[in-house]
Length: 84
Image (cartoon, rainbow, N blue to C red; front, side, top):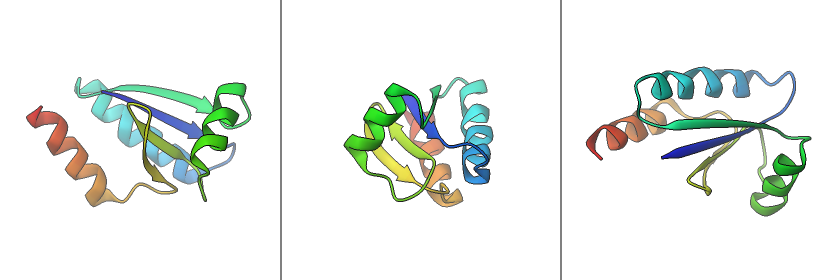
C-alpha cells in the first residue's frame, strides 16, 4: 500500500503524520510518499480532493484523511495492514 502525504510548511499536524506513518513504513506495512502542497503534484491532489486542512492523506490515491490523523483511525489502518 502506498500512502501519499501532501504537506504544508510549518504544519505540526503534517510533522506528526509523517512521523507516525514513517514508523509504519519502517515496519514494512506501507510505502510513504510526501509531497509539498506547493509542488505541481501537490497542487493537483489538492485540486482533486479539496482538503479542509493539512496534511492531505491518501491511501493508494484515495482520500483517507485531512488534518490531524486521529490515533484510533491510524491504529485501525495499522491493524488492517498487518492482516493483509
